Length: 155
Image (cartoon, rainbow, N blue to C red; front, side, top):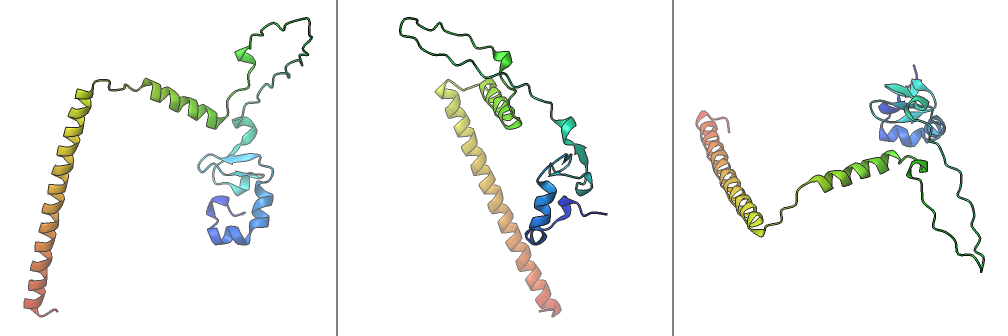
């Protein structure tokens, strides 16, 4: 069986660079687990056909070239949104992030912001106090353990 791309270690990738380049140069399959691509499904741990995963995009014809004449003024043209190509996966994720940011509520009153700041300060102080208490308990335990080992003659 052919070794999966997922199984290659960094040192092996450097040694087998030419082979790996040949495997990934014309991808036809994508791994559903780790999103690596390869020309043959034997090189992937959970292969899925790339042609089924990507819907063909309709490319609109290029806009007509307009020449400006001295006597005529060009009329404004309306752009058809439906003729634009679909955004890529990265573009789609950025659109979703902007939508999420727009949906979050912004605190407009400074009083609420001050209240939240005070709450955070109190929580930080409480957490610091708990950490100091835990460190003191660990130190006490270590001292007791040292004394016990010394009494038993293990040290």
